[in-house]
Length: 335
Image 1 (cartoon, rainbow, N blue to C red):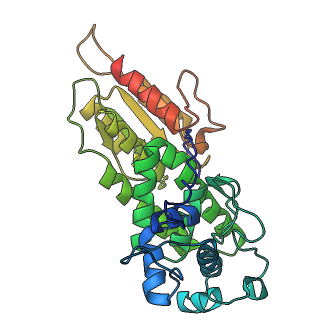
Image 2 (image 1 turned 135 degrees about the vertical axis):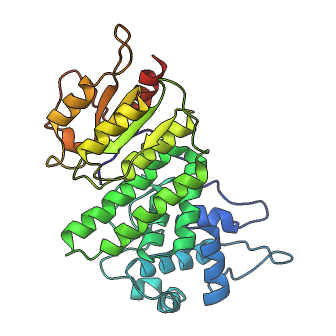
Image 3 (image 1 turned 180 degrees about the vertical axis):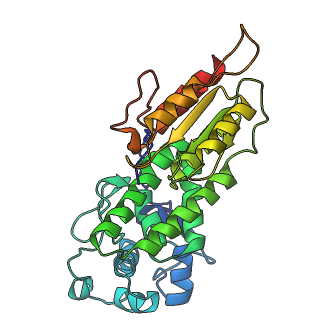
């Protein structure tokens, strides 16, 4: 999965709560999981805190958190939750640590706001939220995955959430897929399916057309990777730009007809692979014009995606990331 990139700021754990210990929400942020997951592990597997404050309020000690970290490490290896919980309750975590893996928090504190381990995937130096999203995807936990995706978008904004949280997780799953004999195909499909759902729940309704201000987004013929374009469409809609988004592998004749019918200010053509990028197609769309003689106009065409890396088209913009694409398309619409 190729990234439409952007920038964001890290936000680490906020520390302990008054009265001693961490709240469930603080523990969830530290582990990179949904709060409901922490509560489920408590009620279903007995992994709750050893002590509680008045009423039912949970306060988690470092020992309680370490137990949950062991649970995270074991579930990331694919172990069933019940068995992972049994091992997590072990009094000597180092005796049964997951093979080839050190539990997060064992021996040294995790970096604030960042994560290097604990998800079962080689994520590298990424935001803490990536770990939780990767774990939910590996466990095929739909409720937790939706909650974490929505929380990331709400906290960081769509562009930063895509660039700093979702893309690194998708790339990690893709690397595992390529190197493990398609072991994680279902995880990649599961995660890719849930991302558009989160986008639709956080993006305003479709923006009404404005004459000469519509952006048309389409995958080139033979290209079925629509997810990056769906993110771009959501980001533009969020900014009030009218968008017409088409599915994968739009035939040439249909693309040309759509351009003529909508008269867009800009057209974004996505190509994931070099085999689908077509310089003649981009040039043809860029040369299209409409309107009365003397006032004819045509679209600004942007070539989007890694497939255009060696198919540079003279005179056409090729944004390197999501933020750049949004800026270029907004400028095309307003010009």
